[in-house]
Length: 157
Image (tube, rainbow, N blue to C red; front, side, top):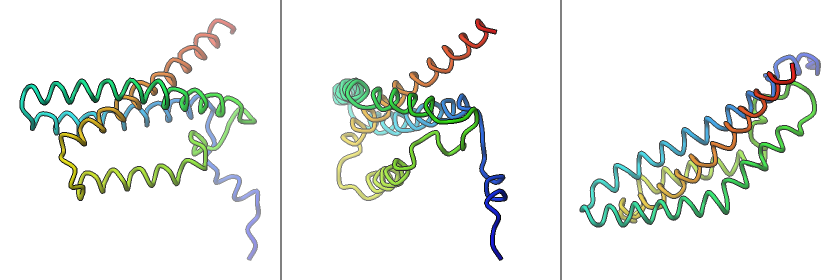
């Protein structure tokens, strides 16, 4: 039995591009909050002065990760989604297909670090605060892009 390509095409979950931007922003926002939550819990296990110096280190790291990495990645992803052909596109295109293996690797690495790593949780807290803060901040690019698009849409019609 041969599957008709039209049948498979009907199974493809298509949405308007704005939903891809929203999903990407919410994923980055949610993962950033989750990582910062882990960092907060782990840093609270340390003493007062250590907690604050580690938190400051995490914030500085988050600023660098945002500026040099995630903000550029978010803007590039926004341009990529905007350039997709058609008014409606596949729901899973909110992220480039080449990034899915990287996401799986990062999730596995995060689980390994949380469960099996000999690195103290307070030091992991600095890294998690840096990555989480960078993701959280970069997620705002998606929301600003959506707001601008909606404003232009309402102003134009």
